Image (cartoon, rainbow, N blue to C red; front, side, top):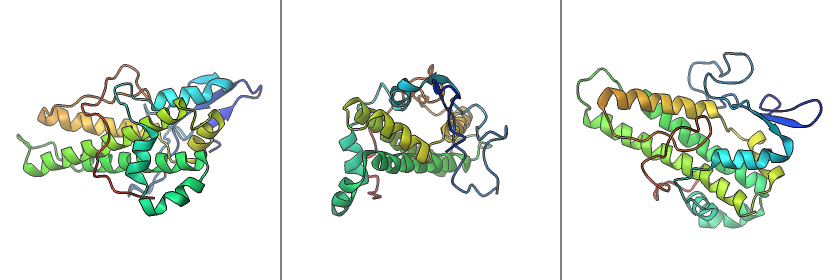
Length: 222
């Protein structure tokens, strides 16, 4: 992930930006219209002291209105039969898996929202169903990252492990920004009730999602 994490030549700063899209969205292109792997409005390019990178990333993942634990995430994601294999993974590898699942939820939420037409005077049952599914997926993505922040706070994941996981993962702030843009488009068209994203991944002024935790029915994926 050489274009996402760039240490300065003196080794004192570290820049965390959006990673290019890793899933095929059907247009044959890639993110990064500026040619640097960043998405419009979605990248974090803030230089920070290298010794504080882990804490910075954990704070970015944390949603202060949630109380997700690492155990919540593992219970939701890892099938009982796969627990031994899961436990054999390093903390960094486990975090990569969780970030990958969160990214998949982001992608699916965005896809659901993009398919919703906004040229109708009133929302149809299909529109309402797609909107609720997108909100469910969005909630899960945010909760999974919040669980990573909790693991860092508990000392389960160290600074180097967290930074390594982000470098190796499909983490993309641009995807989250696109998700929120689509959500705003749909809610503006139909006056749906929602609260903007509550984390600090790309806008510290936004407030929390209107539902705590993750969906209890999300499938085990590991």
